[in-house]
Image (tube, rainbow, N blue to C red; front, top):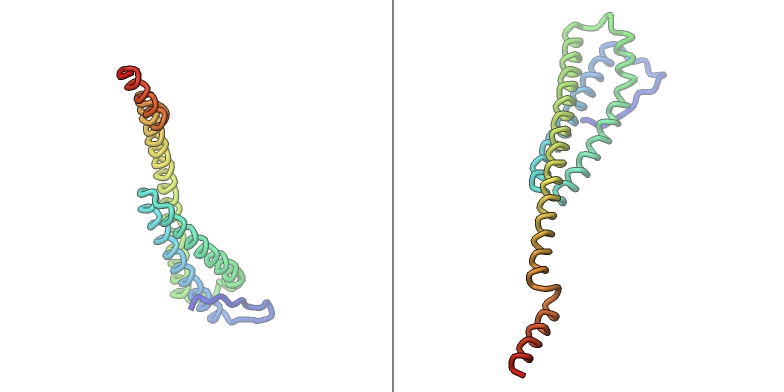
Length: 168
């Protein structure tokens, strides 16, 4: 399980236990980053559709995942330090597994950053499109008012005055 539990400094963990614990926590961290990547990628559709409710839900999920990742990172720090200080006698297979997990996490973080950057660009573009649309609607509204007059009651009274003058 990905449940965080910290090791006290007094606990001297054997090299093998430290390695396995590090591998377990790194695998957990990778799964959290994968979930974060999925959430950030899901944001893209909501941004394109300007789905505010969907974006709000995404942001809540992303914040929650970021807290979990941050907590795991803090939990991993003492293990990484003991791993590096005791690293000379590590089992090569264990060392490879740790290196692969760390590289996988690094790649996932880069992918998340890329998607977040693309989402930001899309959001800016969609916001600009929305501004243009609103500006166009305002211009259409002004044209309609200029053509029809400011409000329906006033137009009705003006047209009735016109009729009164003709018939009167």
